[in-house]
Amino acid sequence: MKVTVEATVAAPVEAVWRAWTTPDDIKQWNAASDDWHTTAASVDLRVGGRFSSRMEARDGSAGFDFAGTYTTVIPLELIECAIGERTLRVEFHPNGAGGVIVRETFDAEETHTVEQQRAGWQAILDRFARHVEGRS
Image 1: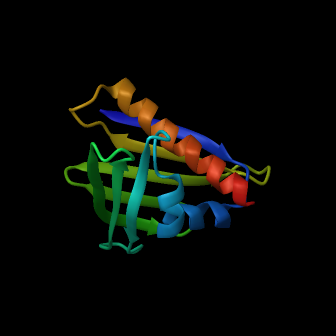
Image 2 (image 1 turned 135 degrees about the vertical axis):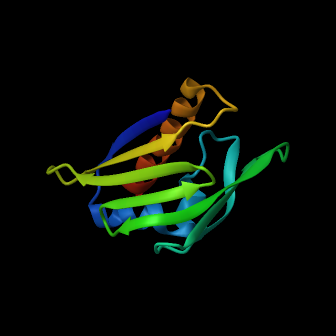
């Protein structure tokens, strides 16, 4: 099953793209809630390149690696990835008002409900938007 989340970011597409693809930025926004954080991130932004983010509970009780391989990279427009057997598509659509609609479509996993996944991914995307807008 495919799940889609999106957010409008009030910033130029170049700033949105940079924050999405820069490890130092990823570590600042990539968490669904304040009790989690990303402790490490790497990006090799090219087809066949790998990415990884280490997400951990701030209390040290849990953590996991979110990692995959880029399958499509069209600068300022589209990133597609393989995450094991799952796929992720991230679209960057300038909205004509100086902002960008960021839309993520991903294959749901089987550990959590679709609603839990949608809520978690949306929370991360909303945090991303606040991060970028705070820098613009």
